[in-house]
Length: 132
Image (cartoon, rainbow, N blue to C red; front, side, top):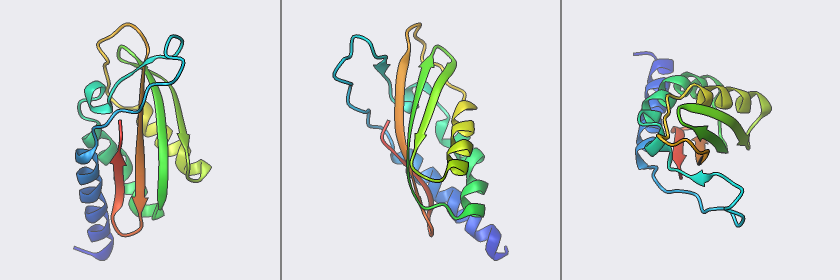
């Protein structure tokens, strides 16, 4: 196995471990009457760990991403609506947003649900997900 393959494998392994550790929900907003209710990522997107791993593993290895990105998305039934990404370079935000929009999710609810989580990138370990 060459060095590039080892780095990609290490990045993917780290991503899987970090996604597995995620599970907390974000606090509700002060004006809960007008904002969507909150839902945990894993509750709505059962295979988010695997899907994000497949979508972002190569990106993490190729670009050597570092830092944190906060992701907020709205979900209504199985339709992902608005996705916002804060942190990181605009090009990386675009790729993260695209990967999140491709998640296979279903809230099982007719009303809008807000889902938020954080992705943490480190040079040696790849991607970590926390929250949501």
